[in-house]
Amino acid sequence: MNAMSPFSFELKKVQEICTKHKVAMVQAGPYHKCPKCAVEFLEEEKRNAQAEVDRMVRVKHFAGAQLPERHAESGFKNYNVKHEGQRNALKHTVSYAQNILAGHKNNLVMVGPTGTGKTHLSCATAQTLLKNGKYARYITSEELAQRIMNAWDQPDATEKSVIYDFTQYDLLILDEYGLHDRDKRRELVHKVLYARYDRMKPTMLISNMTIEELKTDLGDRLWSRLQHGYLTVVECNWMDQRVGGVA
Ligand SMILES: Nc1ncnc2c1ncn2[C@@H]1O[C@H](COP(=O)(O)OP(=O)(O)OP(=O)(O)O)[C@@H](O)[C@H]1O
Ligand SMILES: [Mg+2]
Ligand SMILES: [Zn+2]
Image 1 (cartoon, rainbow, N blue to C red):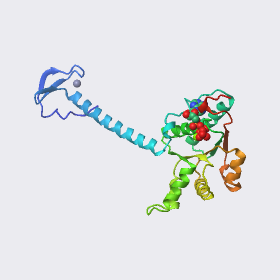
Image 2 (cartoon, protein in one colour):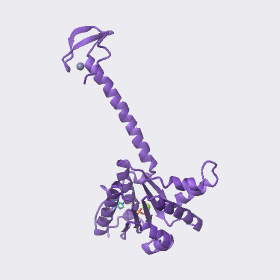
Image 3 (tube, rainbow, N blue to C red):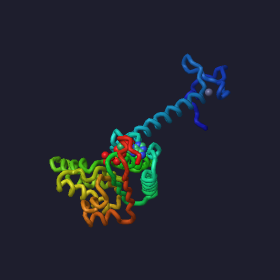
């Protein structure tokens, strides 16, 4: 490092030697200072400021994903594997995350009864992508429909603009699909799925429906589009983990 200390020119050298750098200190006001220590101090300050900016960017990046608070700590590492079904679900979601990081554009459908860890694994996938700089977004089907409907009354957003916003993410996790109450809501959710298909953006679709029910609910056209390339299907058919089930 060749940088000159801001003290080098004007300040008088004193007898004292910096024990760290073995150079003569200078008189700086009432103090004796080492010019090299001063440069190091400024560089450290710069590094700290940059680290703080990086941290804030990271916080914003993760906040943008809107993962549910309850799943803030849900990762692949703390997903317990007690049987073949869970081993399979973990394996498929891990490789799905890796494939997206590698640039693949495929979709994943995860179905199963309540409390079987579907949202946990989807958040683990999101965390993996976020850590690697990708944009993931979590939303329930109900909330997505509501978002689009809200745009109808807003001067600065349109249905199209909200749908477009949801095509921007590298991965959209659409959770609790099928809990929406009316046909109109379903149609809006389908519009987002079509839009993501058109823009070749991967979607993770999660539902309590069976695969057969899901196929019927999505309709042939959309089901066929979801399968474009390769569709990973994960079926979580075991007992509710919230009540301690293992089988
Ligand atoms: N294999 C597992 N290892 C560790 N925790 C798990 C596992 N499976 C489920 N859990 C935990 O159990 C709780 C319920 O799981 P989760 O919310 O992912 O279920 P779900 O399948 O999304 O249910 P629902 O269909 O009702 O939304 C969560 O706190 C989750 O972290
Ligand atoms: Mg869930
Ligand atoms: Zn020094």
